[in-house]
Length: 206
Image 1 (cartoon, rainbow, N blue to C red):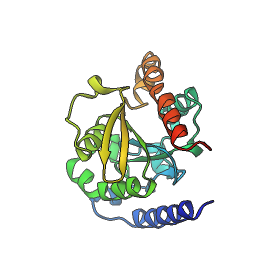
Image 2 (cartoon, rainbow, N blue to C red):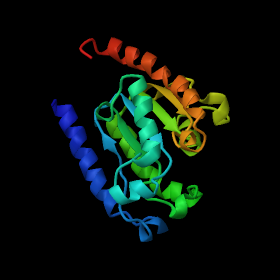
Image 3 (cartoon, helix red, strand yellow):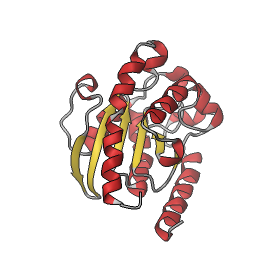
Image 4 (tube, rainbow, N blue to C red):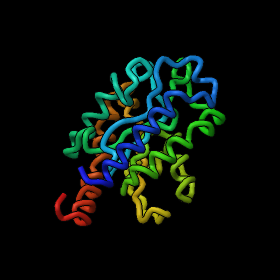
């Protein structure tokens, strides 16, 4: 492990501790566990979801249960594993009854997400669902559009950390409610094949 990767891992570990003790919004009163995120701190690709659900709240891990199974299938379709990516949510605590995140909750939590993006510094960010997509588009100065118009596209942007690609996607949970949606999700996910090739060209040893 290189010194830079070791430093990133240490920063991520300290951030996890901070998230575990977070009380910036009322969600800390109803959570079982925080769900800070997991994966390779030096990953070239980061995926950002919306909020933990019941299974995530119990296990402290992102994307487990049925939506997690769909996500793993999507990763496998482009020859990726969880060990090769970094995976997190906008919210680090489960909203009661899996309701949508509230504005105040997002505002209280995105500081941690911004730090994760800064530390990992991925070249590609895949946004899973509407809330993650709208936040990242606004953060990187991309004009807001409906996720139905953007899903499966790759948007090139310049940031203070260098060039990045933003890939808006439907949330994997849609395939648990409407099984026919899996074909659409698999089709959209193929954009990451191109992203991996771009990363390999930047790093010939990849």
